Image (tube, rainbow, N blue to C red; front, side):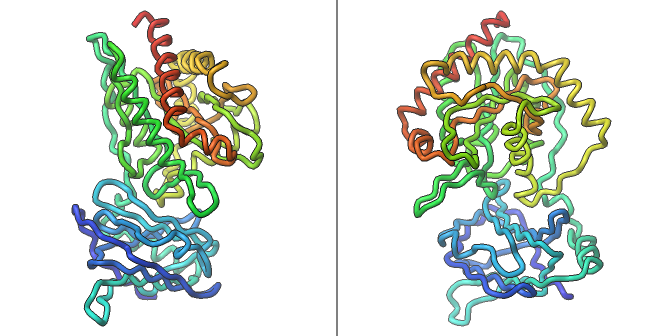
Length: 386
């Protein structure tokens, strides 16, 4: 199998994907995406699950309806969206090992625009392994590595620093409502994160920053590293997931634990922990002893403070914001693993519940909720004598 590859060059190029189409069967499937200018891209492969990852240099405006790239043929899932600055990603997930026989940018015959042609086909496991081995082309780190950053000590000038993490982003949309005008979790969390940042930064002695302030992808490890590298005293990750039980609504606060407090928390953590996989990032498994050490450090050094913050948020919400039953729960969320930063994951509501969806889009509700979170943070800081 021959694999055509265009060299990817990091740039500030802005491209528009005007239309897309997909056709094929269970053996071969073609994807064509129409661009206004020539797209530069690279291709590599990731296993477990089988994924073809196409990175496009530049920022792509996807101007076509998402249903034009609904998965079919050899693909069971297709995702696309922004990664880091100057890079956009297309992830093609297949049940069986698959590879690209053709991957090339072609100029349209009328001279107006370009099209990206991706011809995929089912391959043998040996062929897939060979393609994966050669598929990085000296660019194995293209899957958004986490750059180790030395943690900074919390500020000694009395400033209390809060890291606000807008869950999901870019290619990782998070939960999505059904219907003509879908609501994306990544947009809800970013809107709330920006509002919470403004509210906290208006408080004396508190400085807040966002792990992301635009629609870009961050790996779970990067979110943790950003908080630690900037000396955060607290880490608050915002989410708005979905549940099978559509009647369930209200806010929930989660802290980390090696065993989930209940089935709902366990299922939610498992979904959230797949964010890197969804975005085509190769998750490097750490030795079990390292995981045990991380959990142990988190428990001994920060878990009590995380629980204190969670209780403060729940107390702030009671009687003001709808809460699910047992609103403080716990599970093994990877985004909460900073060993030296008290961390909570806050479910603002559920996009599977129509009333929560309406509420989460209302500016007055957003303002009320961020005010209550800010009050909880201030109480937590005051309790520490900050």
